Image 1: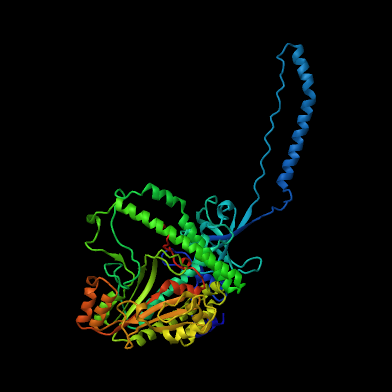
Image 2 (image 1 turned 135 degrees about the horizontal axis):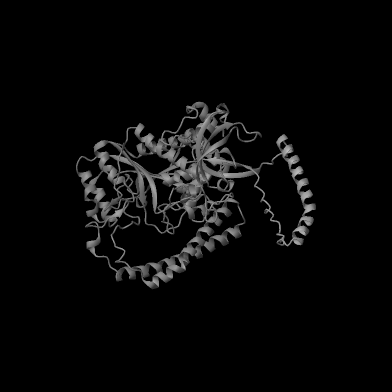
Length: 622
């Protein structure tokens, strides 16, 4: 909390105009009331209109006092007594009258049963509904008090009910956590909830269960706060680059170029629903969902291993869990190979005609936009892009999805060190931005998700960033005995290696640079030693690799040689080679995984929980 308080003292926030109406819906946003220093006490007595959703509720019955009888009632009672006495007198004379009628031959009187009015059903007691209402503009809720004479409590009380009400701000009768409450006297709208099918109740649902109902997730305070931090970081990204002389360029999502030359790509094709029919046998296998269950089990086992590592459980349990995970992964690979072979047979049976393809050449969803950015950097100097990138991996990972958002940049007339300095400044700018502009939401995150989140951001924003070469990092890791996989020069660092460096060795973010050339894409500049490439990764605690950058190869002969060594189709890259032939300039830049920055800021562990609508292997609807 000290970091946020220090930030507020250094950078005081301008206070919003008290109870100003939101321009486009003529209601008061709750943050303009509840985020005031006095919690809104200075606005007591004002009439406002607010709208939001019921987070929780309760109902209190109002007991009616026993009223003393009025003068009119007493008069009516005495009159009634006189009437009853007259009736009694007449009733005593009725037998005599009947006997006389019978003697003189009159019609016999037939007595009819007396009709009694049905007992009146008791009227329901009046009640008052106390509603905790949130409109998403801030973490706090406003207590709204509604009398049952305005609306039926059965409509208002269910969690998730949407209301638009008008009333007067008052101080609560009983002091509590609310400084003010709204006494409603007009109900302008009620959006009722079908309780039998509504997924939320008053109890908090775990995040993994919320993923099955993504269209309702934003109604939870946790997801709402995370998305507000995400929105703020989006604005911060554009602010940093615009303030530092970069031009925003939208790179193509559909491309014929494989920017990295190694990742699996999404192939774009066109197919009508009538031209593709699924093999019934394949459909039957798919309905069994055996592969899905195996992968889900592997995910749970992986989470168990991480938990055992964090809790320093006994080594026997950890070793058994690791072996169990290996067996599960092997089974998943076997099932995946079986499905691929069946899918291949099905696609051969229903071959897509070339005339159905929207392009005359193979096209893909872009993996990276850095090559396209380089063409603009060669003309406009400093450019950046912010958008989705795609990787057709079938790997289930809490930090990788087929569609993720990236920030990418290219800087003209720059080298590797320049890109590293820019990455350092950009990362620290984002950390400080969250502390300065997401105070309310980060306090909630610190309370409900990760107590260390604010301190982690504060430390990253203020401390110098450690920088080590890949060779130095490997030598450091070789000295650690408890690694499951021993670090060796020339091999990619594992998640375990990266986590140990960030969490244990440097205890904070660290840049690793000068990687072996075979671990980096073809366009990265080769260093003079002939073994390493001018590339870097920024790794951070809790997340791992957050950013990858490099200096681009300027020498045409080395670039073409590298393309040939890797067996890449040269025709795909002729346009890129043209940049090197005509007015070439040194450029460097980086790719920044925006979604993983949300994990670092909030302390959440699965990237699916920080993306509004995550695309996954088993979830691509909504």
